[in-house]
Length: 241
Image (cartoon, rainbow, N blue to C red; front, side):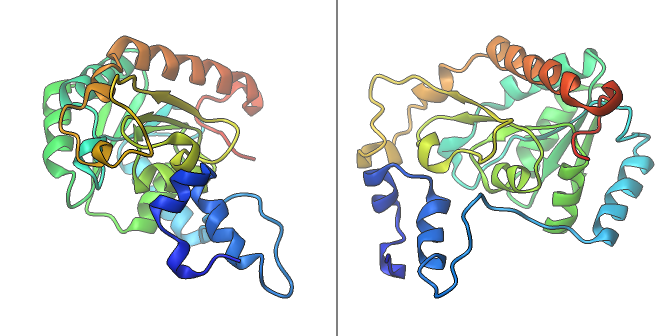
């Protein structure tokens, strides 16, 4: 059994198992252990009703619109893709008819406001000043989540919203989104070694720089085409039963 002292990034990287499985090892040591599947967040009916009302106030219909929740921030600045590339992705998706929700938290306001201003499109909205579970409910009603390796990326996976995630200096095997409808774009870097401490302090961002806007847009559109075939009645915004 792992104790709490073992729950550090060094262990995760050495064994290259998903971090959630390490934490589950502790739970599974209990006399009646649960069966591991993957992390889940269960929302209350009033939280889901809040999300419906919020989307309606924005003029969006979760059953008919293709709603893409985008989080351009991250708690670690080294994991953030570039604002101008987010702007170009957002503009391309909005011009294609998708409704884009830019998720903005206390540390994300700068980049979210910049992307919103520079994308300058009626199909782009900022979600700010909301409690975390309210954000989770909004993400749950979205067709797709796109963003960096961040807490909101894991939250999106935990409410069963399909994810397209960007990974640079962190290992997607350990920190990637859980679930089978997700896509991960991994940056390429000549210096990249996930077990090497210098990656934690690198300022070059060569790995993220290698991820180009056109490739991101292509992957997101492929994911949307895939989801449209799986959704009941071909409904663009409905991704769960």
